[in-house]
Length: 375
Ligand SMILES: C[S@@+](CC[C@H](N)C(=O)[O-])C[C@H]1O[C@@H](n2cnc3c(N)ncnc32)[C@H](O)[C@@H]1O
Image 1 (cartoon, protein in one colour):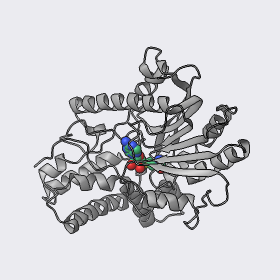
Image 2 (tube, protein in one colour):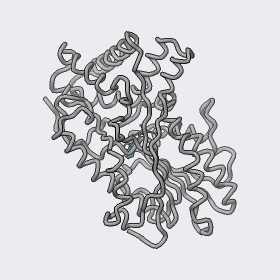
Image 3 (cartoon, helix red, strand yellow):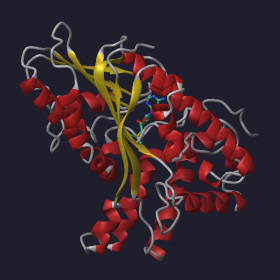
Image 4 (cartoon, protein in one colour):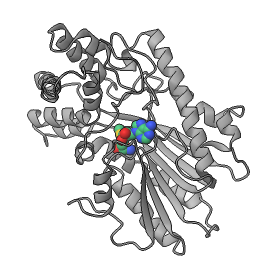
């Protein structure tokens, strides 16, 4: 039986540090934000000293992918604002791998230099609240950052009957997803607008769909989501999963167009713009799939490529497929089905590696909070 459409517990990344260990692409995207973040740090109000300078990473997962960037910006801020306490707030959903996150910042994970152990007056906090809520106190946030997180929706807009992702949904289903995505995006921006201090900056790298119809996993070669759909429907046809389980499986995500993304920050009549949060700069960039690049350069064998490429998306897709399965199945049964799904994906890549890859297409945005407006 198809479960009621509601907010699914299907968003978490795989835990115990697995997400950031295999997420070379998302890390490269974050490292790509360095100059935007450092420029933003330079723009924020340097005169205010009565409260801590506050930096936040929204949707930080286990903190491993942003560790280098946040560490270097905190070090820079420590030097630049030597008299001020520094606060770093990491946010994610309650099921996130916060334990690993604290081990990362505390320099407790080999090969991943943290920053808390050798800096004075730096204070790290975590929040398990959704970024669709106000998390920080009003006008207390100086530098907000987020990468690869804002395509997750606050709720599941509809059942997708014939695909696992909105990119393959029917027109009607896709309209439902787009409506929720636009509503969520406005809400998320209004929440940040309220939190940001005058002159504060919001730097983001968000997945998007560009003017060529490209998006993550569909940048010219194989379409990753169509491949997932093909395997999941094959497993349905072979009765490995039920039809209800197939239809109950969908990513709670939507890739917005560039226009839909920028509108609230540019349109003078929008609530976000009127709250004083406006666009500073934007551009799209693509980070080539690091696993495909290594394979093409002969650094990875075909088998290593297939395993590492599939693992990198297993880290964020597995919970979605698991959530589609009937609750009455045993844990072992669920795990066997998931292992089979990823085995089949690996087999597909091994059969014909050409065209597989997960190029990371993002819209990089800097928004600024004008000093004279409050929501
Ligand atoms: C693909 S991961 C990106 C993690 C990290 N920012 C990076 O770029 O590597 C997306 C993260 O967003 C989090 N997320 C999704 N919806 C969220 C929400 N409503 N509030 C807070 N975090 C959310 C997920 O739990 C996940 O950790």
